[in-house]
Image (cartoon, rainbow, N blue to C red):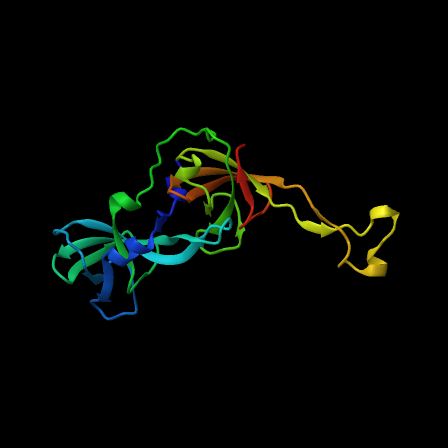
Amino acid sequence: MIAAFLSRPTVMSSEQISHAPYVLAFRDRHEIAGSGNEVYVRNLSAGENARFAVVHVATPLRDPDDGKVVGYEGIYTATALVQRPGDPAKALLIDPARETLRGDRLLSTDASETPINFALHAPAAPVRGRIIDVVGGIELVGQYQVVVINRGKRHGLEAGNVLAVDQAGDVVHDLYRGGRNIGSTIGTAFAPKVRLPDERSGTLLVFKVFDRLSYGLIVGASDTIHVADVVRNP
């Protein structure tokens, strides 16, 4: 049911990126490649007619809790069908989702496919994290868009978990404490700060889980959802 909304995203480690086969060149010498184009691939050990997902290495993903890079977003571009083994091997691009570039990596299809058969349920343990990225690079998130959250297997998440999304409350200056507008006399610098409550803005379905990150599909949105918004047990 949800397969139509999932763009086969994945998370790659720096070690995985450095060892993965990669697109070296295009047969027609174009700058980009699409459906029906032939590409040359290095470091590919596979026989004729083997299939691989072609992945563009995109945004480094940082955990806002500690600032560390915990992976790199991998965006599916096409499927590579091996036509002639070797180094470089020759492959045909099929089933495209976007353009393929030189340097894009190849992954086994087992490593890139998303499981879609799972039961929906709340996490067994308390979970509280944040949205750290949106697949597609947009800032505002709506229903049926895919996001990355900074919680994964080590935090008890699994495919099928359902989480609430809260719009993070703003921090405002209280200029009116004591019954008068102190902002008019001393400005906001010395006014006390108050953090407003988080407000429920949507529902997220976790569909692909890594060690410290997960992909989720926004299956309901009552308000605009942003990067840095909170995800938690419903």
